[in-house]
Length: 313
Image 1: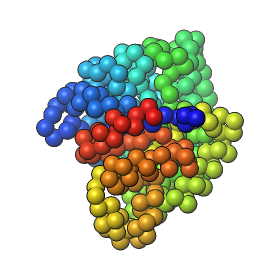
Image 2: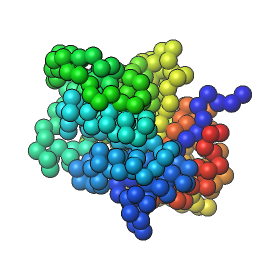
Image 3: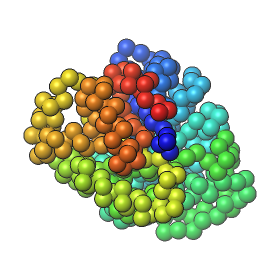
Image 4: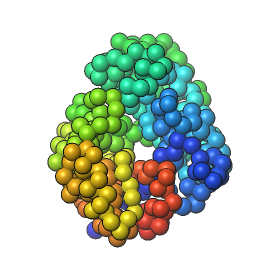
């Protein structure tokens, strides 16, 4: 029996490939067989996600585009809804909408935006997503009153191409976010928790297989009967096609105080020969349900043959 979720792959890009323009890069990503081009939303790196997504959509035909993920603290949802609906409309339904509560301390410190405690940021993200979905849903006026946003009889115009709006991807590593994502998102990115505001040893340790077991349970708790309808997404912190996986695993293990074997088994790392990579992807789908993997931009070409072989399988 075929697995209920077929493999697909995305590339996360801060900018174009070194030897290409942005539009040339988008066309190449599409030609290599990737499903999606994702753009991050950090103030210290890369292109502005909204303009970058629109430009990529204009020059491609099948490539999905999306942010991974928009920090809900940076933009008011009533304004953002209009921009996102426009991108979805002009791309004829190729937008995937990644949303997050913010985690990178540097974004807040350098911009002067207040970084509230996690509970407040998550509360705001939930309200933000509720407003976006409400404005996407119909052409009748939408109203909402919450602790962070208040919308009064606002028409969601233009309407997105996709009925009720683009699929929503929620990424996170903590119990509350993952339970809420299970109940409300279409795609769930099960990631490490980044409590310190930066990628560190604690975050690496939180990406190990036994921790992912627990995180998937949280998603199941929130999802209930809809769990099998969810697509689980893995943002790959490390991706390498290599004949010497053990050496790289040993280096990473020493860096992050993790056993090298655990490095290789983490679903947020993908290291090995092409055949080992394929085997690990099948194992991870069987164990956790991961079917949607995000490859770093500098490894997109290396992984293209694997993408071509596994996509849809």
